[in-house]
Length: 105
Length: 207
Image (spheres, rainbow over the protein chains, first blue to last red):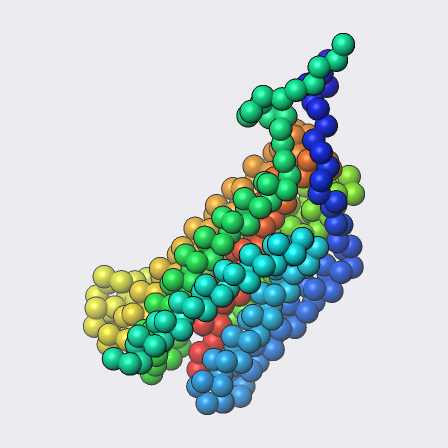
């Protein structure tokens, strides 16, 4: 009875299944990067801008790993990657405009 | 004769792809919300560099590191619970989501202790000690409380989202062939993790 009106949804999405092993490898990488960023900031002394650049580079690598593997971005259609690029470009644009604004005052 | 048709909003015109796309679009707005706050941080930090470093010494690096690891682990368990449900293993999926839920609680408890310590030192905006700090340090703490507070709110919302997903998995509404809600809950949870990935070095690790 229940199935009378359940017209099967078109299974347009071919689901990718990530293996536990892959997910765990990514997690291990994220932990290593976390330890690295803490060590870098607590044990070494760099010039300030280098320290910030390093911290942001490590953070962005982590963010990329999370988006790519945990959020399945790697297996999404190219359209999704383009959307992410557009959003990041928009944010970069904000950063540039704000920087120009502040440093030309 | 068998007629099969679907009315709008009858629940039978389910579209997994559109559901996922909608979630991603929402996540972009979240990114820009926090992005705006990071811009404020960038400007104030560049104007008050020494004060930001001085103020950041009040934060406990180990509490921050522990919370980073807790969030990363919870992201792993959400991703694994999706894999489990895709393979039809409902029980394992629920177990992994429960672990995620507990991790969210652990994160908030650690955050609670961190905030309490700041309250005791009178560092919350409006408190006496706070008002006597130099402008740069006041800005740092203002941003610290605002950004970690907004992030904490996202942790709470994400936890509720995942709890709802767990109930629906239990009742069989979310299952192997209709996994969107779990996937979207997972996406939201990963966003919470993503934001923390940037908050952590920018507030705790400046020396």
